[in-house]
Image (cartoon, rainbow, N blue to C red; front, side, top):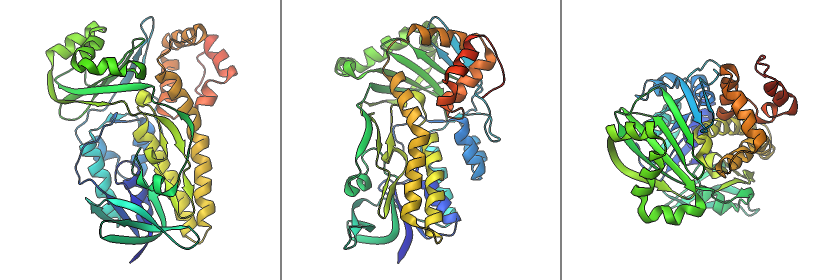
Length: 400
C-alpha cells in the first residue's frame, strides 16, 4: 500500500502533523521506535498559544484535564527586579500547562490514530527510499519498506530523516547550557511557574502531573564538566542560592531519578526537499531557556500540515513545502536569536536591565512581556525602538 504521507516520529510534532493530514482525508502512516506511553527529556510547558492550537484541534480539554495544574502566572526573578504576571490569553486559551510527556504524547498519538492515521509503534526507520531522480519516495527499516508522496521527519534532534535527506544546518550556535532536573512531590505553590536568573545558574520550577514539580537547574556549557563531577552537590548548591526555594524543596519529597542533558544545540536545518520535510526538533532545535519546544512544535505541525495538504490536493507539493520552509524561518528566527541571547547567561546590559526593571514595575507591561516569551507577541515588534520608547516613558498603552 502506498501512502500520501509517512511521518517518522510520533511525539509533539509528528502526531499532530499526522492527525491534521489524516483529518484532511489523506492516507497517513505514523511510525515511532518508541512504544507509548513513554517519557522523554522535556521542559513540559505548553504555552498559551500551544493550548490555543490544542483547542482548535479539539484536544484542549483532554490535555487541560490530564492532571497537570493550570498555571495562573509566571515569575522571572532577576535579583534586583522581578517580573511576575499572568501570560496574555490567545485565541480562546488563557492558561499554560506543564504536562508530563508520558501523558501529553499519548493523548496526541491517540488523536492521530482516531483521525485515521495508521500508527506503528516500536518500529525503527533506518533510511529513505528514492527514485532514479533522487526524490524521496518512502522509508525502509528492518524487514519493511513503505512508500509515500512525502516523508516527514518528526524524529527529533538526531533525526534519521534529516541525516538521510542530507539536510544541512544554519544559524548554528553550539550548546550554551547543560540542564538537570528532578521531580518533587508536595512542593507549593502549584499555580506558578518560577524562573530564577542567578548569573552562572538558572533555577526553574514547573508544577506538573501527580502533585509533582519539575525543579530544573541550568549551568553554562563551559562549566558542564565541573558540574558533573558531583551533580547532586552542584544541583543543591544552585537551589540554595534561592533560600525560599531551597526551603520548599527540602520540605518536599523527591520522586525518581535526576534527568540531564548537555546536548542542546541551537540551529535551523534545511526543512524541506524533493519528497521530504522536517518538523519539530528535527528541523529547528534550541536551548530550553524559553521552554518553547512543545508550543513551537505545534505551530510548525500546523504550518506543515496546511502546506502538505495544499500540495497533496492538486497543488505543487514541492512548492508548498518550500513555502512552509520560508514561513517557519520567518516566524522562528527572532525566537532562536532571543533564545541564544538568554541562554548565554551573560548579565543584561545596563539598557536591558533598565528595560526589565521598568517592565517589572508595571503589571500590564509584565503580561505583555510574557506574551513575547510565550510566542503570542512578535519579538521584533515588542523590541522595536518605538515600543521600547513607549515602555521606558512609563506609558502603559494598549498591547501591540
